Every structure is written in C-alpha cells, then in structure tokens.
Image 1: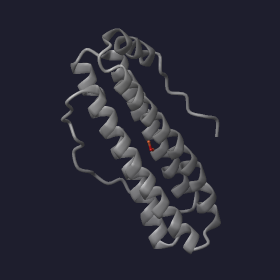
Image 2: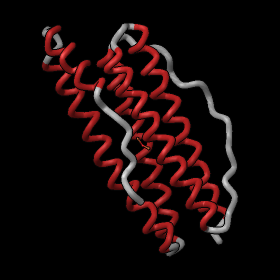
Image 3: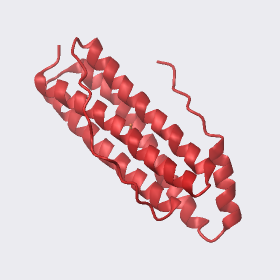
Image 4: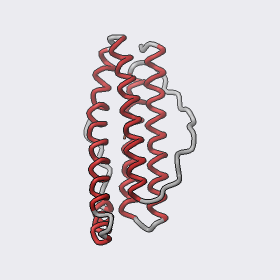
Length: 168
Ligand code: FEO
C-alpha cells in the first residue's frame, strides 16, 4: 500500500524514465543521421538503460500492491547542432531526473515509507554515476574539439558499449 501522493510520484517517475529513453533515442537518431554509428550506439544503449529504470519503478509499484499507469508524454527535442550539444542536453536531462528523484525521496522521507526510501537509494546512486559519466564525456569532447582522429576514436569506442543490467 502506498499513499496516493507517493503512488502518483512513483508513477510519474516511471513515465519520466520512459520519456528519458525517448529523449536519448532522438539523440541517437541525430548521431545516425551524421553517420556517427558509435555515438548513436551509445545513446541507444542509454535509452535501454532508461527503460530498465522505468521497469524497476513499474515492478516496485506492482510489488507495493498498486497499479502502474502508463501516460503519454510530449515529443522530445530533436534539434541538435553537434554531438557535443547532444551530450550537453543529455546532462541537463539527467540533472532533471536527479531533481525529481530527490523530490520523490523527500515525500517518502516525510511519510517515513521505508520500503520506498530504501528502493530510491539505488536511483540516487545511479544518478551520481550518470551525471558523472555525461560530464566526463562532455569534458573529453571539448578537449578533442579540433582533433578529428580523437573524435572518431571515441566514436569507435562507443560502438562497443553494450547494455548490461546489473543482477537484482
Ligand atoms: Fe534514469 Fe538516466 O536516469
């Protein structure tokens, strides 16, 4: 059993994670259109990560005896001026996710809903990793801005990224 407020908050977060997957699919499509298949793969894998996050919330809502409600959402941004711009927008997306997870954790803490507090800890740690990952790539891209060899090496490196959900 969850309070109506917490149920809604968890449900909104589930839908927002699906939206994040959409936002990353849009960046992947931009990279593909620029023939940067490694960068495209990076964002396709990231979209899978986001669907995995959404499904973690879906399963938790069910486990708490509630029903997950699937919403629609607005179209993500499809305008990018460069790969660096795509990564900068991805970092902003992650910062928004972090803000939402914190708000959700505040509700769970107010309600002393310990199962939810414990569940959300995983997301708090995950957000530290994701923001750090995007920030590091942005710094790297800025450093190699005028070095096309290094840029294509990074594209090759990202072609190898694979989705590996951790064991529950
Ligand atoms: Fe599910 Fe990248 O936050």
